[in-house]
Image (tube, rainbow, N blue to C red):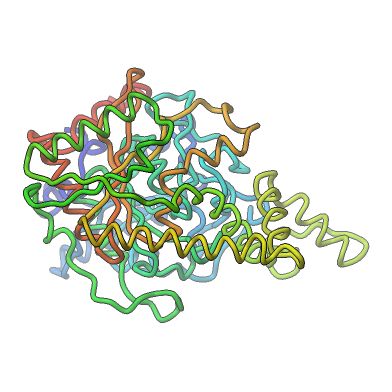
Length: 496
């Protein structure tokens, strides 16, 4: 099997057996990036020299008998809103086009400590504001299953990198579905951990009470390994929770019997593409036939989730992005006076979607509107969280579609922001409640595009989510979990 079609844990065996060096592996992925990324647009910055040096250091450490992390020596890609010391970090915005951070995000520190070669920084929606990676200021990103379709967003580049074999695994961020939605569109596994499980230190903020960092992988085992690596308490992040981090990979077991699965009636009653509905119902049936218990549950307040999100997230974005004023760092457009300089800098530095959300957020926070919009949205957010709490008193996990449709065509929704926002209708409630959620493939539609299954768990029960995902994966592909998807992704991009 080609290296780009292998999971991290499969590659780990080759590294441990001495059949492969990290340098050889990293060189192979850099070559694939050079060959394919001009078409796919997954990367904004490729760090070839740095990645090769990290691979050399890993090989040397292994030769010296040093303890090796399971993901050590395995090439990884990082979303371009995570700070990387000495490596350009743009958030896909002209505002930060030439910014080089002087420090690493905590999750990047952990990658470096594990000696995982960082291949580069991945394309995204500008400041993570979007659901298709079409708001990137620098380049178009294309879905490797169909080059005329979006990869999802905002972590589209990270999803493409894994789906097309341009990285073994990657990191993204999820504010309203920005890991799970592109994972569903690109046919890979993507996980948003519980808010507070993974440090946000060094993540360029969009909406601070919603943002969370998580992995993209080819299968659930890799996801568990990645989550164990990046999770843990960080005193530099005031929202980081000081809790023991389980060994998620060691806890994986394929056991449907006794698993209590909730089916949210409000989700399944939404307009959903027929092929998406059939694939999700097929996954639920498979789990039930193997001993899982299915139960309908009600989440009545989630009907207001999208409206609530688009009050809270833009308000926080308005506050967070106020720092980009041309004074301290990033773009500065010279002008006759300071007010004009700030106005010109923000006018030229931000794209249309970012401006739209700043204006909306500033409005809902303004005098005379705060109580009617932001305060009310915060109260509804509490109701949404309580709905989930009641549901998890009856079931272990919830299962639903990740998205109402498969990947849509480039340009289809750029002129209709509301239609774009509704693509996140099933993922947004999970962020508002701060819960862990995972997306994984569960079938294809009649056009051959991946359908995403979403598994949601109680706070800090990523182990339950991963167990349910691993169980389904093993039932669906008993001859080798996920291999069907790694072959299927070659339909659009000939990478043999």
